[in-house]
Structures are given as structure tokens and as C-alpha cells.
Image 1 (cartoon, rainbow, N blue to C red):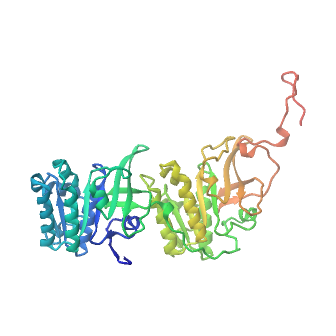
Image 2 (image 1 turned 180 degrees about the vertical axis):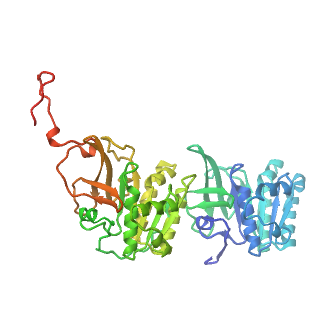
Image 3 (image 1 turned 180 degrees about the horizontal axis):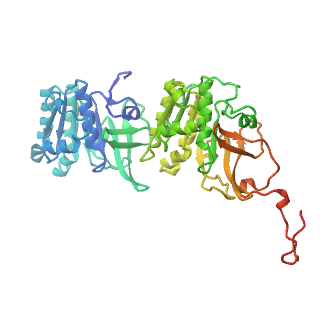
Length: 499
């Protein structure tokens, strides 16, 4: 990719090029800093193997005292490791003996090694070692200047790692100011699990993405997940006045003909109230009309979901096989919200789906460890799907099965939902009944009644209005004839007059 006179090389790290605003500045120097264990060596080796696999000569130079065999033991288990490239296009060197002699010897060795191999990428892993062995040397700045100028003249890009953790707003070592790009890796504990993150402090000639971005290290190597809030909005899709059917005629009638196109609806309820079934009926109805849909789930594998749909008279396999419904399923373990949501939006763009059903907004809410980000992430998601004209349904799990508590303060319902459908159990005449009500529809007339519904072989069926019953939303229902008022001064045991 070329912007004016600036040329970038791709890094081979998923998500990093997007965060850097293009990739590695060709013939420039990238500085990667962070504490031990943050992933610097993994990132450096991953870049090295990516460049070598693309046919570019690479030199990897370690300043550490451990031999190359130890590095191979640590990184050789990752999928990008290819021993066939070593000695052919990827050359592993150590300059630790030279580091003990002095800074000038290291600079000469780096330049000569790059020249002899015709390197297009040079990785120097462990700049901190030079500083530790020669803490008072005035040659550090000259070392970096000489190496960077010489490598640029050779057409070689440099990646330098250091465990130096500097104050970027105060006094900093020379490598931070002399590098063309500076990336910070860090890790820490968050809610009982290790949290990794990356921040780009600068990248000359490129509009890098600001903020802290999630990082994960797996068997595939290191991956970066750009902050979902920074994803650009697409061009607004044409608006439509046609309602979107939920797949349940009586529910559509309560909503004046169906869901408004491009709106966001949350089906909120306790476990077992049929929230997932609401989503499945909506997707299958869309497929019946030739409209594409996307289902994102977390708990149930697809085979279980398809079996559940069949038990309620819904064919999920057929539309999935025909490409009308796509399914993204994520096991709810150590997930990154930025990754999950980005994959969903990418799938919407790939398939052109106009219906999006996410079964587990509660799971997404839990993924965002930083409470200050939650509102921003959800607002960004809402803006993206609305701009694409996608009609979206979420499920949201409420805490109580039966009871008077209906406080949604602080939940995604406050910032995300245009429409809210409440599914609830109530205790009535010695049994549990299911009730449904539309709590909210933005700019749309809707039925305010509370309806009983059944779940059977044809899915959810909303029943007609029945005799007025009080206390439905409290979870403990009663007929008006059962209500009594106790008068002051009435003797115990006497029945009160009906009010």
C-alpha cells in the first residue's frame, strides 16, 4: 500500500496492519517495548517467518545469552514456525559475545550481517541487554542512528524489541524518539484471567488507530483485535417502509405489522422463556421470504440448535445449506468482544444478510472487562447495523425467574434497544404461566397489553387477550376479584369488603 511517498510492508500479524494504519514503514524502524512475557519475541518471530515465507531474506539477531536452541524450544511449537526457512531465507544470529565488548562492535556486526545476507528485514531482539551491559555509554544514540541509516540504505526494514518501559510523556530513551513507529505490548490480570493489550504510540506517515487494543497469543501466534469503536461506518443503506415479520403473526399484529426495518430489538427474559426460539422463528421466516440472515451464538453447538429448531417445527438445516442463514458459534471461554463483533460485521458484509440475531447479549456484555467501554462498544455496534439497514434481534437474560424486580438500569437495554419484548414467568392459580409484553417500540404504535403465550410443536404462539389479571409483571398474578383491602380496626379473621 502506498500513500504519497510512504510505502508499507504487511506485518503478517492479524489486526496489526489495521492498527498501524498500513503496516511496517519500509526501510524504517519499528520499536516494540513492554515487560517480560508481553509477547515481544513471539511478535518478532512471527513477523520474521511471515517475511521469509513471502520470499524476503530475514536476519533475526538476539542479544540474549540463551542459545538459539532455547528460542526454538519456546517458539517452535507455534504454527507459523517453519524450520525449512531457517538457513535459507531466515538466518538466526546471536551477538551476545560482541555486546560484552562494546556498542560499536554490535553496530558493525548488525550492518555487516544484513549486507551479507541481502536482508530486507532485520530483527534485533533485546535492545535492553546493550543498555544493561553498558549503562553509562554515550554511544547508544549514535548506535541507533548509525544502524537505522545503514539499514535504510541497504533497503532493509528493522524491528527492535526492548523491555524498557518508558514514560512516553516524559524523559524517554533515544530509541523511542528515533524510531519511525513505536508499539507497546502489556499484560495484566483482569477478572481472574490474563489480559493482553497493545497500543501504538506513533507511526510516521500513517494514521494509526488510537487507544488500547486487545491481544491474544495462541497456538497460531499473536493476534491483535482493533477496538470495535474505531471501525468506520459504511454508507447508509436505503430505507424501507416494509415491516419485518417475526415469524409469529399474533406478535407481528401487536407490533403494528412487524419489526421496523433496520431497528434493534431485545428479547429479554429468564431462562426457559423462549428467547432463542424468538430468534430462530425470525430467521427461518426471513429465509422463507428469501432474505438472508446471520445467527451468532455462544452456548449451544449448531447440531443442538438445529435439533431444537426441528422439535418446534422449524427447519434450520435447509436455509443453512442453501446459504440463506449463516451461523457463527463461539464457545463462551476467554472471548474478546472486539473479535466476536468484528467477525459478525464481516459476515454481514460478506453475505449481505439483512437479519442479524445474536443469542447472548449478556455474554457480550460480560466480555467487556472495562466498564467504561461497554456503552461505547454497544453504541458502535448499533450504529453499524443501523447504517447497513440490518434488522437486529438480541436475547438478554434477566436475573429473576419470578418476582417483582424489573430494573434494567445499567443494562444494554438503555443504550442499544429500539424495541424491547419482555418474556416472563408468572405464578397464577397454583402454576407457572408464560407472559409476553412489548415494553418499548421507538416511534411506533404497538399493543400495550400483556399476553399469555405457549411453546409447542409450532414454536411460540401468542394467545388472544383474556380476562384482566393484575400483577402480571410482578410475577405473582391475581384476578381483580381476589384483591382485598384491610380496613383499619377490623377484627382479625373477618373478611374485608371488596374494593
